[in-house]
Structure formats: C-alpha cells, structure tokens
Image 1: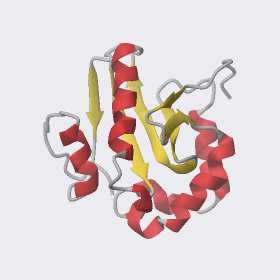
Image 2: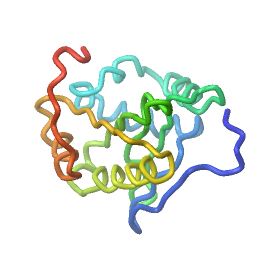
Image 3: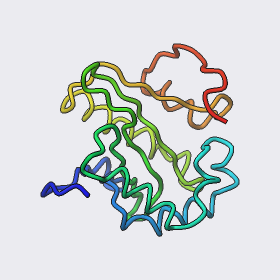
Image 4: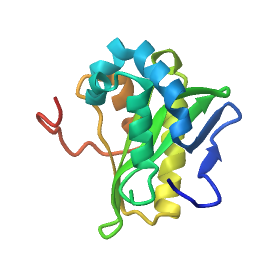
Length: 165
C-alpha cells in the first residue's frame, strides 16, 4: 500500500469531495455497486465480477499498491456520503497521456457531481501531472455519461466498436 504521508483529496464544491480511494472504502463501494447493479451492469463490465465486498477490496488493494503506477482511483463523496468512483487509468508518463474513468450511483446522477469531479481531475492531470492528452470513454447510448465530455469541451474522435463486452 502507498506509504506517502498524504492522500490526494480535493474539495470540488462545498457538497462534493474527491479523495484517493483505499481498501477501507470497499464495504461502502460494494454496497453502491450491489444496490445499483442492474443499472451499472449495462455500462460497466466489472460489475458482474464484483460479487462481494472482498472483491471490491481486492481491486482497491491492487490500485493502491506501491507498485501500481498506471492507475490512481478516487472516491467521490456527495454531502459526505460515498457517491461513486473516478480515476486515472492507463497513466502513460512517457507519452503524457491517460484516461479518466468514472461511475456514479444512479440516485446521484443529474446533479453535476461527475462533471465537476472530472473538472478537478482534469486540472490536476494537466497542471500537476503534466499530461498532454486525456481521454474519456463512455458507452454508446449512455446519454448521461456522454454529456459529460461534451460539456467539458472534449472532441469526439471516434467510436470504438466492440471495445468491451
């Protein structure tokens, strides 16, 4: 596990906070996944593999391990309640690029939580990590999620056919 003396965290708005995820978040995250399983399953292939809080904890241990340099995952808190996950995937420091992945609990959608959280991670990626290229990938037909890159000024470069099952 990471041993640095601080955890990355930001106050996005008075009601929205983003902080680095830890294995201690597993029970609350699994609760959200399990509660919203039917909704999340349509867009996120990992949902069916997440069958217990132990599965979620194993994932969080992997992404928070000292040797992991390609992923950085954050929990999103809305009014001090866990609302979803956002993170950097496939961090490529040599080519200065990464992808931002995210999901939000169904009851929290439509409040601007994810757009604002993405703005915070974008600023950090460009200003602190010195990234040159950032990708946001969303499921075709997922209008809630696909509105976010559009509102953030991203350019649609294409549709990746059969990118995930």
